[in-house]
Image (cartoon, rainbow, N blue to C red; front, side, top):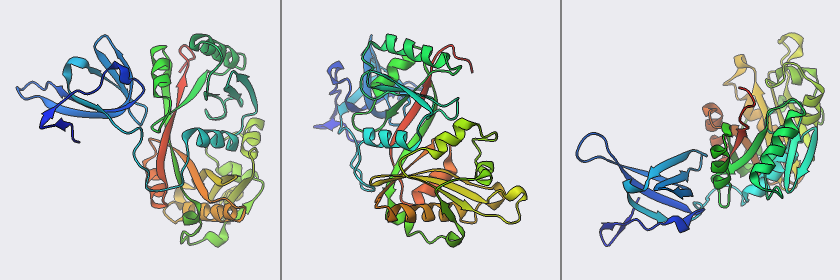
Length: 339
């Protein structure tokens, strides 16, 4: 990382650069005379009382004492993307919301409050795009009240890591006591590459418009399939369900399942799951390939998916299929809403 100008380190950022992507170097004292240099890249979200807050791509906020800075500069808003289709984070966020629709929703300005009896945070959180039409404190109070009426904790979904994302709003919620509970990557790639995967067993994958009890039995997020579960899974613009039968499994529970929602040029992959004893057989790849081929038949050309940041195994699988990280999203939980 190069900070020098004529051979000298310079701090070339000020508080007027709030909201811009910056790269800074600071000197950390380590108990010896030399200390240690540490570099941080992210969005400058605040500069108050001698402390900078920089929100990284992953949503983590780093606080840095101004006195420890030895270099700093504004850098381009996002690195050039060499793989995958062109897309903005708001476009992908709206497509993701349509692919996983809530049971009920209500507007709050340009925000959308979503609830589905607690089934997944995605379907039980505020889609906070645009302005709520009122001050942030008032908006968050309405959010808490709306979810409390339904016996649910309040969640707000925000994005980081792409041009124009919501790093500053993330910091605002943290200051108000909202806790970042879960983070996920949004990955994108070329759909044809997924459909062309050499996947042994792809011919055994059944792709249908509906899901049965066996599919639900394999789906790990729903041990007891309440009505809200069926409504969320079955909703969306053009939804397909994949099943790999397992004749030896008790109760007809399939060896692997998957779900795909086709929305214009985009195909979104969700609920790709494999029986623990059948992993490393290529079944997840077969499910993805079969769903991708069906989406290609509908005219889609680009693919997206979401995967929690802690799921390292899935990261490797999807990277091998050509999916690159586009941005991250996070669910912030309201203070005082339990564990």
